[in-house]
Amino acid sequence: MSSSPPRRDYAPELTNPGVPQRLGRPRPGHGTVYFHTEGGTPRYPDITYVAEWVDDYGQPNADGEVAGVVRFDGTRQQVLDWARAQPAAERLIPGGDGWIALPADDTDVRLRGDD
Image (tube, rainbow, N blue to C red):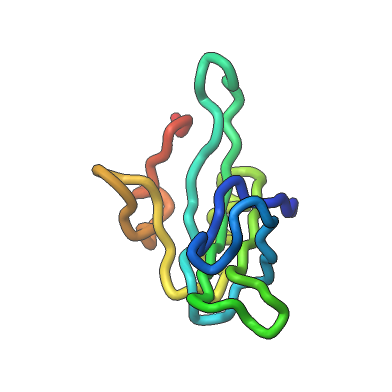
């Protein structure tokens, strides 16, 4: 498992521009796990399977954290298993013009880079 800082800001209205946001852990029963791939482009040809559990708190908590974020990457099956095991409110994959529910059957999950 690897954790890395998120590449985007969460709840920007709750923080000051230029000040790093304080991030915590997602809360069980809240947030969304996004299962997707990174790479697969001419510049970055290798495919990486990634799941990110993002829980926007709505208001900063007592520690000043505005969101809970956890990232996991690995093989396709490792990441699918991790994504399904998290107690998030929902799980999504890219589809159509946005995000769709993660199918229950792995054979129905189609991502860029899958053969």
